[in-house]
Image (cartoon, rainbow, N blue to C red; front, top):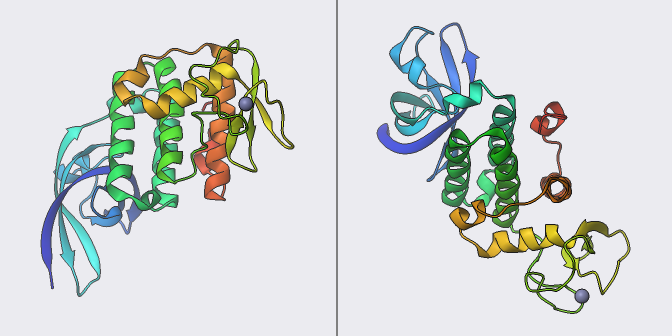
Length: 254
Ligand SMILES: [Zn+2]
Protein backbone atom coordinates (compact mmCIF):
# COMPACT_ATOMS: atom_id res chain seq x y z
CA UNK A 1 0.00 0.00 0.00
CA UNK A 2 1.31 3.43 -0.90
CA UNK A 3 0.61 6.39 1.35
CA UNK A 4 1.42 10.02 1.97
CA UNK A 5 2.15 11.40 5.40
CA UNK A 6 3.48 14.60 6.92
CA UNK A 7 5.51 15.07 10.09
CA UNK A 8 7.90 17.42 11.84
CA UNK A 9 11.49 16.62 10.98
CA UNK A 10 15.10 17.74 11.25
CA UNK A 11 17.47 17.02 8.36
CA UNK A 12 20.43 15.32 10.04
CA UNK A 13 22.44 14.47 6.95
CA UNK A 14 22.40 14.02 3.19
CA UNK A 15 24.55 11.88 0.96
CA UNK A 16 24.60 11.53 -2.81
CA UNK A 17 22.53 8.75 -4.32
CA UNK A 18 23.28 8.19 -8.00
CA UNK A 19 23.89 11.24 -10.13
CA UNK A 20 21.12 13.60 -9.11
CA UNK A 21 19.47 12.26 -5.99
CA UNK A 22 20.23 12.17 -2.28
CA UNK A 23 19.67 9.81 0.59
CA UNK A 24 18.43 11.91 3.51
CA UNK A 25 18.51 11.03 7.20
CA UNK A 26 15.63 12.66 9.07
CA UNK A 27 14.85 12.81 12.77
CA UNK A 28 11.11 12.70 13.48
CA UNK A 29 9.01 12.60 16.67
CA UNK A 30 6.91 9.56 15.65
CA UNK A 31 9.35 7.20 13.93
CA UNK A 32 12.71 8.42 15.16
CA UNK A 33 15.27 8.11 12.38
CA UNK A 34 13.77 7.95 8.89
CA UNK A 35 15.80 7.40 5.71
CA UNK A 36 14.19 9.03 2.71
CA UNK A 37 15.11 9.68 -0.92
CA UNK A 38 15.24 13.19 -2.31
CA UNK A 39 14.90 13.36 -6.09
CA UNK A 40 16.38 16.24 -8.02
CA UNK A 41 19.75 17.84 -8.65
CA UNK A 42 21.38 20.79 -6.90
CA UNK A 43 19.22 23.30 -8.75
CA UNK A 44 15.85 21.86 -7.75
CA UNK A 45 13.68 23.91 -5.38
CA UNK A 46 13.22 21.02 -2.97
CA UNK A 47 16.96 20.36 -2.90
CA UNK A 48 17.60 23.87 -1.57
CA UNK A 49 15.04 23.37 1.20
CA UNK A 50 16.14 19.91 2.28
CA UNK A 51 19.55 21.04 3.55
CA UNK A 52 21.43 19.79 6.60
CA UNK A 53 20.08 21.12 9.94
CA UNK A 54 16.94 22.61 8.40
CA UNK A 55 13.86 21.68 10.39
CA UNK A 56 10.16 21.99 9.76
CA UNK A 57 7.33 19.99 8.26
CA UNK A 58 8.11 17.29 5.73
CA UNK A 59 5.72 15.46 3.39
CA UNK A 60 6.70 11.85 2.73
CA UNK A 61 5.45 9.38 0.17
CA UNK A 62 5.88 5.74 1.01
CA UNK A 63 6.16 3.33 -1.90
CA UNK A 64 5.66 -0.18 -0.56
CA UNK A 65 6.63 -1.99 -3.81
CA UNK A 66 9.93 -0.19 -3.98
CA UNK A 67 10.32 -0.31 -0.20
CA UNK A 68 11.21 3.34 -0.37
CA UNK A 69 10.21 6.63 1.25
CA UNK A 70 10.38 9.73 -0.91
CA UNK A 71 10.40 13.37 0.21
CA UNK A 72 7.63 15.14 -1.69
CA UNK A 73 7.74 18.54 0.05
CA UNK A 74 9.40 20.38 2.92
CA UNK A 75 8.29 23.53 4.70
CA UNK A 76 11.32 24.90 6.56
CA UNK A 77 10.63 26.56 9.91
CA UNK A 78 14.20 26.90 11.19
CA UNK A 79 17.28 27.14 8.99
CA UNK A 80 20.01 27.09 11.68
CA UNK A 81 22.12 29.24 9.39
CA UNK A 82 24.76 30.06 12.01
CA UNK A 83 25.93 26.40 12.08
CA UNK A 84 27.67 26.88 8.75
CA UNK A 85 29.64 29.83 10.10
CA UNK A 86 30.72 28.44 13.45
CA UNK A 87 32.76 25.27 13.74
CA UNK A 88 31.79 24.65 17.36
CA UNK A 89 28.07 24.77 16.57
CA UNK A 90 28.61 22.47 13.60
CA UNK A 91 30.41 19.83 15.67
CA UNK A 92 27.97 20.12 18.56
CA UNK A 93 25.05 19.62 16.16
CA UNK A 94 26.87 16.64 14.57
CA UNK A 95 27.33 15.09 18.00
CA UNK A 96 23.61 15.45 18.78
CA UNK A 97 22.74 13.91 15.40
CA UNK A 98 25.17 11.03 15.84
CA UNK A 99 23.76 10.25 19.29
CA UNK A 100 20.19 10.21 17.98
CA UNK A 101 21.20 7.87 15.12
CA UNK A 102 23.44 5.50 17.08
CA UNK A 103 21.07 5.14 20.03
CA UNK A 104 17.98 4.84 17.77
CA UNK A 105 16.49 7.94 19.41
CA UNK A 106 17.43 6.54 22.83
CA UNK A 107 14.31 4.37 22.57
CA UNK A 108 12.03 7.40 23.11
CA UNK A 109 11.41 8.96 19.71
CA UNK A 110 9.28 11.91 20.77
CA UNK A 111 11.46 12.97 23.72
CA UNK A 112 14.60 12.53 21.64
CA UNK A 113 13.15 14.72 18.89
CA UNK A 114 12.17 17.43 21.40
CA UNK A 115 15.57 17.34 23.07
CA UNK A 116 17.58 17.53 19.83
CA UNK A 117 15.23 20.09 18.31
CA UNK A 118 15.41 22.32 21.42
CA UNK A 119 19.19 22.03 21.48
CA UNK A 120 19.61 23.03 17.82
CA UNK A 121 17.09 25.90 18.04
CA UNK A 122 18.79 27.12 21.24
CA UNK A 123 22.25 27.06 19.63
CA UNK A 124 20.99 29.15 16.73
CA UNK A 125 20.15 31.94 19.19
CA UNK A 126 23.31 31.68 21.28
CA UNK A 127 26.96 32.67 21.01
CA UNK A 128 29.67 30.03 21.18
CA UNK A 129 30.29 30.37 24.93
CA UNK A 130 26.60 29.77 25.66
CA UNK A 131 26.59 26.83 23.24
CA UNK A 132 29.45 25.17 25.15
CA UNK A 133 27.40 25.07 28.34
CA UNK A 134 24.32 24.20 26.27
CA UNK A 135 26.06 21.07 24.96
CA UNK A 136 26.79 19.93 28.51
CA UNK A 137 23.14 20.39 29.46
CA UNK A 138 22.06 18.54 26.30
CA UNK A 139 24.36 15.58 27.01
CA UNK A 140 23.26 15.43 30.65
CA UNK A 141 19.61 15.29 29.57
CA UNK A 142 20.46 12.72 26.90
CA UNK A 143 21.95 10.51 29.63
CA UNK A 144 18.60 10.76 31.39
CA UNK A 145 16.79 9.73 28.20
CA UNK A 146 19.10 6.71 27.93
CA UNK A 147 18.28 5.86 31.54
CA UNK A 148 21.91 6.07 32.64
CA UNK A 149 22.13 9.53 34.18
CA UNK A 150 23.99 9.24 37.50
CA UNK A 151 21.95 9.97 40.57
CA UNK A 152 23.16 13.43 41.58
CA UNK A 153 20.70 14.86 44.08
CA UNK A 154 22.29 13.33 47.17
CA UNK A 155 25.47 11.61 48.34
CA UNK A 156 25.04 7.88 47.72
CA UNK A 157 26.88 7.12 50.95
CA UNK A 158 25.35 9.44 53.59
CA UNK A 159 22.26 10.67 51.72
CA UNK A 160 22.96 14.40 52.22
CA UNK A 161 21.53 16.47 49.34
CA UNK A 162 24.23 18.20 47.28
CA UNK A 163 22.19 21.33 46.60
CA UNK A 164 21.92 22.45 50.22
CA UNK A 165 25.27 21.08 51.33
CA UNK A 166 27.58 23.51 53.09
CA UNK A 167 30.74 22.30 51.44
CA UNK A 168 32.92 24.89 49.78
CA UNK A 169 32.44 24.93 45.97
CA UNK A 170 35.98 23.62 45.48
CA UNK A 171 35.61 20.79 48.04
CA UNK A 172 36.15 17.50 46.22
CA UNK A 173 33.26 15.11 45.62
CA UNK A 174 33.66 11.88 43.67
CA UNK A 175 31.83 10.19 40.84
CA UNK A 176 31.62 6.49 41.65
CA UNK A 177 31.40 4.55 38.38
CA UNK A 178 30.55 1.26 40.11
CA UNK A 179 27.31 2.69 41.47
CA UNK A 180 26.85 5.47 38.90
CA UNK A 181 26.46 7.99 41.69
CA UNK A 182 28.28 10.77 43.57
CA UNK A 183 29.94 10.75 46.97
CA UNK A 184 30.16 13.95 49.05
CA UNK A 185 33.46 15.45 50.30
CA UNK A 186 32.98 14.23 53.88
CA UNK A 187 32.36 10.61 52.85
CA UNK A 188 35.58 10.64 50.85
CA UNK A 189 36.71 8.57 47.92
CA UNK A 190 35.77 5.17 46.52
CA UNK A 191 37.87 2.86 44.39
CA UNK A 192 38.17 4.05 40.76
CA UNK A 193 36.26 7.21 41.64
CA UNK A 194 36.65 10.35 39.53
CA UNK A 195 37.21 13.56 41.54
CA UNK A 196 34.88 16.46 40.72
CA UNK A 197 34.34 19.71 42.60
CA UNK A 198 31.27 20.11 44.75
CA UNK A 199 30.25 23.02 42.51
CA UNK A 200 30.16 20.67 39.51
CA UNK A 201 27.91 18.13 41.25
CA UNK A 202 25.66 20.94 42.47
CA UNK A 203 25.31 22.20 38.91
CA UNK A 204 24.37 18.75 37.58
CA UNK A 205 22.00 18.25 40.48
CA UNK A 206 20.33 21.59 39.72
CA UNK A 207 19.91 20.64 36.04
CA UNK A 208 17.83 17.62 37.00
CA UNK A 209 15.33 19.70 39.01
CA UNK A 210 15.18 22.91 37.01
CA UNK A 211 13.28 23.54 33.78
CA UNK A 212 15.47 24.14 30.70
CA UNK A 213 14.76 27.90 30.82
CA UNK A 214 15.69 28.11 34.53
CA UNK A 215 18.79 25.99 33.93
CA UNK A 216 20.02 28.38 31.23
CA UNK A 217 20.28 31.13 33.86
CA UNK A 218 22.76 29.22 36.04
CA UNK A 219 26.36 30.23 35.56
CA UNK A 220 29.51 28.21 36.13
CA UNK A 221 33.14 29.22 36.06
CA UNK A 222 35.66 27.91 33.54
CA UNK A 223 37.14 25.29 35.86
CA UNK A 224 33.78 23.82 36.86
CA UNK A 225 32.77 23.77 33.19
CA UNK A 226 35.95 21.85 32.33
CA UNK A 227 35.29 19.23 35.00
CA UNK A 228 31.67 18.71 34.03
CA UNK A 229 32.55 18.56 30.34
CA UNK A 230 35.12 15.84 30.95
CA UNK A 231 32.73 13.82 33.11
CA UNK A 232 29.72 14.13 30.80
CA UNK A 233 31.75 13.21 27.69
CA UNK A 234 33.13 10.19 29.56
CA UNK A 235 29.62 9.11 30.60
CA UNK A 236 28.07 9.52 27.16
CA UNK A 237 30.86 7.58 25.39
CA UNK A 238 30.68 4.86 28.03
CA UNK A 239 26.93 4.53 27.83
CA UNK A 240 26.67 3.91 24.10
CA UNK A 241 29.65 1.55 24.04
CA UNK A 242 31.00 2.75 20.74
CA UNK A 243 33.20 5.56 19.50
CA UNK A 244 31.52 8.78 18.53
CA UNK A 245 33.03 10.10 15.29
CA UNK A 246 32.02 13.68 16.02
CA UNK A 247 33.99 13.61 19.28
CA UNK A 248 37.00 11.97 17.61
CA UNK A 249 37.12 14.38 14.69
CA UNK A 250 36.00 17.34 16.79
CA UNK A 251 38.80 16.86 19.30
CA UNK A 252 40.11 20.28 20.28
CA UNK A 253 36.91 21.95 19.06
CA UNK A 254 34.21 20.41 21.23
ZN1 LIG B 1 28.25 11.75 52.05
